[in-house]
Amino acid sequence: MEKKKYGFVIVLDRCIGCMACYAACKTEWEISINPEYWRTKVLNIEDHKPDGTPKITYLPILCNQCSNPYCVDVCPTGASYKREEDGIVLVVPDKCIGCKACIEACPYDARFYDEDLHAVNKCTWCLPRINNGLEPACVNTCVGEARNFGRLDDPDSLVSKLLRDAKKVWKLKENEGTEPNVYYVTLNE
Amino acid sequence: MLENTGSTKRPIVDGWIIFYFLLAAVGLYGMVHVFLYGQEASYGLSRDIEWGLLIIGYSFFVGITTGLSMWSAASHVFGFKSFHTMSRKMMWLALSALLSGFFIIFWDLGGPFRLQILRFVVNIVPFHWTSPIWWMSVLYALELPLIVIEVVLLLLNKEKYTFIASLVGFLVGISAYSNMGFVFSANISRPFWHGPFIPLFFILSALGLGAAFVLILLFIYSNKMDKEKFVFANGIYSKTLFVVLLAVLFAIIWRSVTILYGNELLLYPAAKQLLAGSLAFNFWFFEIFIGIVLPLIILLASKFKSPTASFIASIMVIIGVFFMRYDTVIAGQLVAVISPYFSQAKIASYIPSLSEVSLFISAWGVMGFFYSLGVRILRLEEVEE
Image: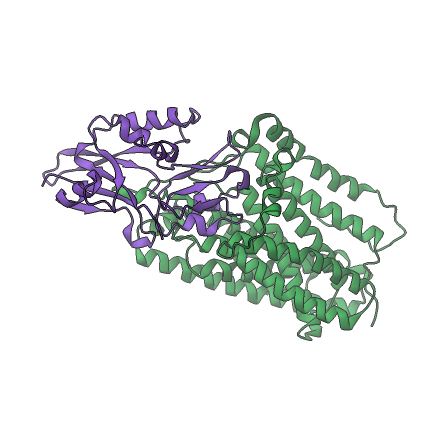
């Protein structure tokens, strides 16, 4: 049983696709410049409105720290594990054999094989920062306050309030049984 | 392919040994490349396609092991005497293929420069029951000594113990290979793989692979065998290969129709890539035409009596099964998992790098080298019981 229930709430109508979160994350974690190496990024989704005019939606993606993480189940060495105290999924590089089964298992494209690390790398919601009372780097840098982090088990937290106030709330690939902990919301109609 | 040598009087090092050694040495290109530039720069993998030719090669070579073990076990365990032929050579070839599979997966996991595979060895306990790769590794770690024991027992003509070893080997072998299929099919994030099809298909096509290699062995050693026995064995394995190919074709047809009929997100675009996209030539030419249709015609036209026809058909089947593995593994990864967020599927691409190709060729050399060494050093000629 998790002692703390952390969650991410992404206010989709606030994201302007500036990619500052991507840059902050890469800097914070000293991730290689390789464009395939990222722990979080923003997808540009091009579509059309009902009247035919083009529209673009910015979709920030990151590890969902799933409550039922398949990436942990498939790991043959226990390198991938879920912390009991807060539910965050971590990788122990010294245990990772590089079989990439967790990468294949993740429905969210949240993992990548890091040649520099000789192991799989992924978003940890900036665990060292949150342990020190700071926000994750991507939240800290988000210009539009689209990214929000906090405790879902605290009704007074910002994330709980956002979930209460939202007009629409959803999670990615909810029907895959992963029980993700990143919520996407819109505050406007 | 494998050479014609039944005599133990031949020198250990001859043209074939040197040929396979040189074939194995082709891999030096990939090895040096990995050493100098690392895996990322050496292999044609990407964030979307993380399992490439080396994984495909692994699944192919250990498939040879499983196929040969199953046909060998068919005679020893189930008493199908019709299949009882050249067990020693079959099992030695199965062992050589297994070592070749281990060789190629070793390079996929970083090779000797990182020895990441040791991280598995030291972390095998506590058991990770939920991990298909944990099971696969443990089962193959068991299969290696089991096949060695089987070979030794066959060499010593201990039929009773061979029965027991074959039975255990059969159970472990079929578990290991179907479990390898499960490594793919367990992934709910990859709908093209997910489900019971791949473990069943791996076993089915391994039967074809095994029968094809037995027919090649029969062709090579035909002049060393009793003619009546040879004609009988060639006929039985040719008919078996024919039936297995029909079953494979049946499975492929219904699998493809089911996927196309469903038009599911992630699944349909993958099948489309296979049938009419970047993998279409592989699928239609190598898998269907070379791997199934042509061998079926050749076997039927020869009325299962021509060793040369069966030999040619077998080589085609081996090529076909390799492409079945290739297409299955790659098609499963071509559609990016983030595709549902977009209005159109995001399609990735994969071309094996020269390093991967060189290591794959090298694995053939490793298999041929070990096999050839065995037929020179060990007494692999069958003796009358």
